[in-house]
Length: 400
Image (cartoon, rainbow, N blue to C red; front, side, top):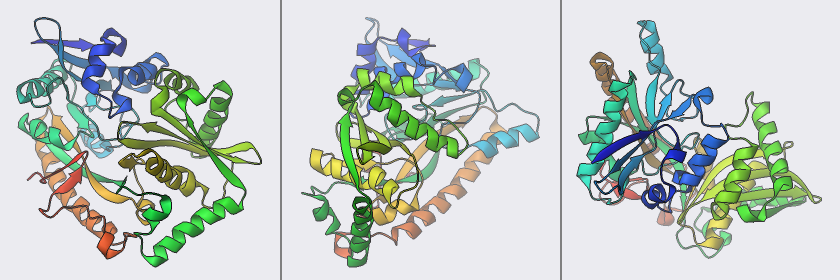
């Protein structure tokens, strides 16, 4: 097997990469990663220097790949290790640079070990080992694999990495025929609250349009990006991805980009940008020109659920954070990351920390699950009958 490290996604064959990436996760596609790099949103200036790994056979056929970056900060990762960096700093050791396998600024579980044969554990293990070797050879403090799928955890653990647990809130389509069909599974009080939220939006004269990438144009994107960037600026920052990135992926991945545009008196007042995979809708950016009662919930959550029901999508992953998603029908699911640190004394300390943190996450999931809006007979439990936890695309037994 031949191992190669590429400093640009453009140096990797697009068809070979996409064959491994598949259609479930649009943000793993070559076009998406290329747009991020070619527009400068992902670069050494933003702290993300590509170090993508590929493995090929003797005939040059790509067997495996890993999106990988040399990081000089921890921004845009959504698996927080600031305290680890501070611990290194206190003893005058460098935590940066580090290696991170992730999709920049995109906290969605997806494959990190892109394999031609999903069952080839030998190649998968070699891919992780190659990333660890690169970290050692390039003087990086550590390797972090963020938001892998559940089926990848055994390989990561087998390679000596330590697993970190967290949770997100996802919505599952139980073959609902309509939004009212979905709400019928709620308790009476929660159902009335959701309907009241939606009614408040319509009473303000707000209407919505669903636009795929090929239904947008430069003018629409100027409006959308203006709404998003002004909302970010009110919070003291700029969006990670810029106008050029959005217009690029709208052109190169037109069926995977969805804009939900809120309009009042024919003028855009709010927007949310989503990515659409084969089975799942992924919520990303949101912006508005002012505050409107219940508009954020409607644009980012209820409209997304409506879209999934109308288009037969099985899942809706609206992003990180938010106990407020529970009352809107989203349920907690496990997410994971895997970590390797070069210095054994820090690695041991991190391992102890992760064990304690996992107990806290389990207690948190139990606590927030009590606030589920579903009637008991329709409860969206986070664990199946065997006590297994939903993570990524399937249920797995929690690692010891």
